[in-house]
Image (cartoon, rainbow, N blue to C red; front, side, top):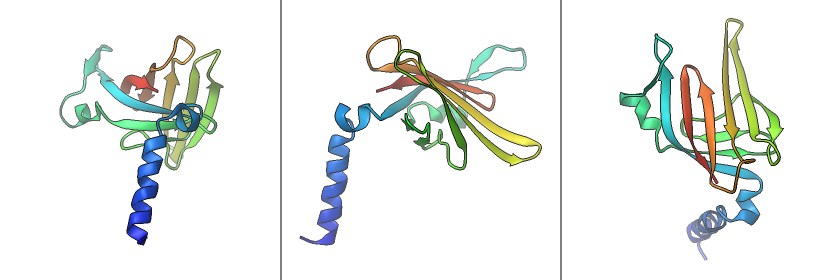
Length: 137
């Protein structure tokens, strides 16, 4: 079997089993952004328009043990995730921080409401002046 076929088969197997509770559901949350809002100058949330509204529909994965977040827009590359609550009895909470320089610290927070009922679980996140929400499985 050629190397290309082997690699293709491994990738297909990964995606076939990645959404099963045994492999992915217990150790990760697979999330999709359903809404993005920004705080206006008068303190009222407003919908994102233009380029920022393109974040709706984006997907990301949260590794429950470490709090690491991987996705197109929402990710913790170069950040120090801190799992504040592992979920289950309480909601899962993770805080990600990165010091760019002494005058600027990037922070984003995600809370997955996994204590309320069965999947899909609602989530809310905050990054810069944006609030994003959606569902996780």
